[in-house]
Length: 205
Image (cartoon, rainbow, N blue to C red; front, side):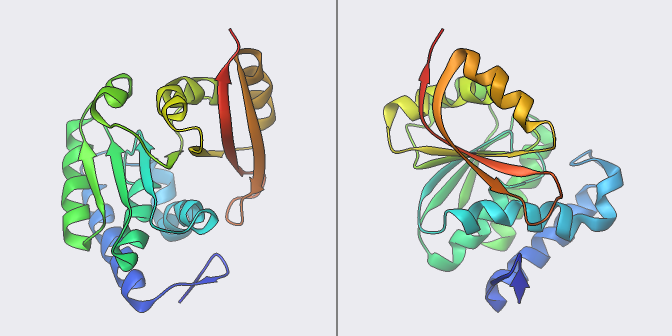
């Protein structure tokens, strides 16, 4: 199977397909994503989320903030299942969404666990990570605030944030309060969208 121009094993494909089947069923009763995106969920959500792992492959320890319907955190955890190493800590305070995520991780054999807590409580429960991800959660300035504690603990931690066409304005706003190194990865799924890779994060004010 080919996903975003990269080869995916049959085992991972089957895990992704099973996840999407569970997601589609649960989305009928709880609001996991915008209803208008459900018909194109494979591209809009699975493919878009897969870009995170494809940019930063390997057995890393991830924190996924505001995991929602599992994008990108659960998708990353599914890719890690094939490696048999690495882990994703998914933070989702909504109890119904957290229940879905637990079931989905268990049934797909994904390498992750769910933390039904507020993001502000995350650094007190999850010690550290190699990488942080978030999608459709908050503006970049706020994402930096949520990520700060973990990135200070490990200076090699990088963050990967999906952003839409207004990302330049978010970067400008964030630079008022934060200093960081930035790489802009153009999305191969959504036109005018990017994945912002943030490292060496430090607070200015």
